[in-house]
Image (cartoon, rainbow over all chains, first blue to last red; front, side):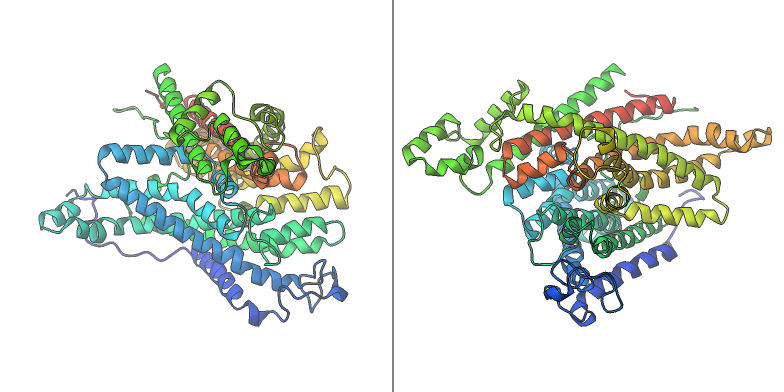
Length: 306
Length: 309
């Protein structure tokens, strides 16, 4: 072992303050949507035609829509769909993609090659378009949309987990575990997969932002959640129809999407930096955030003195 | 170089074929009568023996691998099937809509590059001043704004409130302006963040200090010695971003009623016109691959150390 190399466990570095800010923002929003029934005075589907298209006021900070429903209540309740479903979608996608990646890494070379070819093929299709295709097959609705996005994002996790496993299992400590007689299952679960958790958590956090935008976007296109359930995207689509008269209607849901994405991005970026600081196996280079080509890494630097 | 290009084209072709097979399989597994999916609900009024004949005429009685192979073979000859919604060949539908989306994407990309580079350079130039946190904060928030919200805000401000530009439709540069700006802004913020980071990295290099020591002006050092070396990672991110922007096209075309492929895709999905959906996937995949190849070629020009083999 050479002089500059790290020996012994590294100290966990604290998260950058911006990451804490992101976590707080995201956490507060998740909590607020959970507490929605207690936070807002009126129900999200409570119609009152006397209160149609009211501008923001003290009693209705975000105004009311064309049926006199409270925009604040609908933004809060809508988060249960737009935010929570997005988080669940990403978890499902990470689990499915991770399982696929693990399977591919353990499969015989031919099968691994075929699986990765299929993953590459999926990666050249923008995830949103892939989700649209799946909705075309399943039909519109909240759960089809969530399932479609989970499938569309899974290839990224599959590639990530597979590459971590392939690099990790060559490391001395894994060899040591194998040499000491640990069974393959134990080696995989106790020694190899934990190396992937950090990267998967970072990728998942960054994916939350995309999925929130995409899920609300599908609602905006009328392909996601169906009325009368409140959802940020569907609210924006309705706001567009009321645009000349009631511009305030688009402020609440739009700001909610932005804040959720901002929170996820801040947290994800900080987690990634913290992981890179800890020297997590080339954390930076393992992130192929949806490369624009299936074999984007064919760039070679010259060897020897340049 | 030629070998590299051929290998990339070959790999890309395989990926496109696999993607088409996957999507074809997905569509074949769709619930419901495939004949209805192919010809529309009108066939439900036809008698069962007649439907059976139509089924064998359309090749639906053959096993899936045969059908997938037939689809691929026809696609190679430029026949992507018939749109169930309009009764026209899918290839014609795509040809009609492609120019509008290409124009929108080109305008948005140009704008995103110009704005993103300018903002990134400015942020790096003021990296040690009070402006920096302000600029980086603005870029962070800017990168989080969903493209359809940007579109709605611009739509309200510039066409409904001020009345300067048309709210919906296509055909002229006046129609193009708002959708292109919305899409461009959405991609400019991430681009600016990468430019700033790459530029700061490049400016830390010894040759930059040497250039300053030789008495070259700040601006010259920033652009000629810094930015020139920072462009390679920026191009990479631009390539990835453009792929993502193709997704945003779907939303922006819906906001502004721009008659491109994005709206065609949504219409096709609402009508369950799956032949058309497959055609759109093909066009998009080819565009994404072409983009990746362009990025690789740009690398050659930007970084002479890069060799492709």
